[in-house]
Image (cartoon, rainbow, N blue to C red; front, top):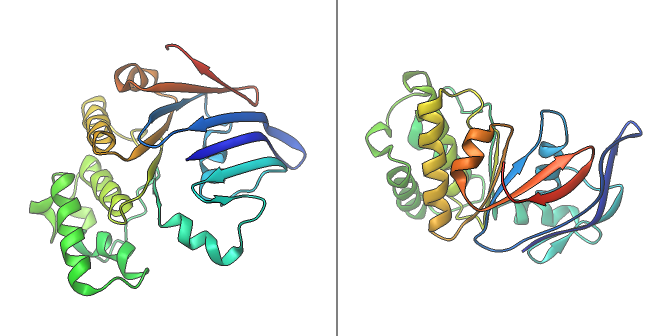
Length: 220
């Protein structure tokens, strides 16, 4: 489903990723670990074609970084859910409308939007908060809205970039359980984090980035 073949990425001639090879299969749970600044976010950006490699090929589903056309990038991004550490909710829209927005921009029909939004809000445990504004929610609840928005397009993979970084330990574990639930329903999950306590509880494969190199490790 996702394949990195001899990938190298540099910023301002500074190597970030060096000759990376990795393969992620449908439905896998991957913990992507490494200290801040080692290239975890860059690796995720390669997957949704926000960054392109200086060398090598990234393949995601039927697209790859060498041949993808600019007009096709929005198409593949609809198959990829992305969750950032900073929630990026629309402050003047309630929970329902924040999630619905992800479908509205794709031209989905109103009745389909309603069904899918209500379903994902139930999945993340926020049906009762559908009319709440972002400032009325706790940090964990805001993060769940972000997950609902990322899932409403029924992605093949969910990329979670330090999703627990600003949360207390209990709420962080709640978010991990949500990620595992999402994964159990067939969506691949790539969790980028430097929180090794979370990784120990996550299960699945662990991929480490260190000194620009990517390797699979047995445990943290």
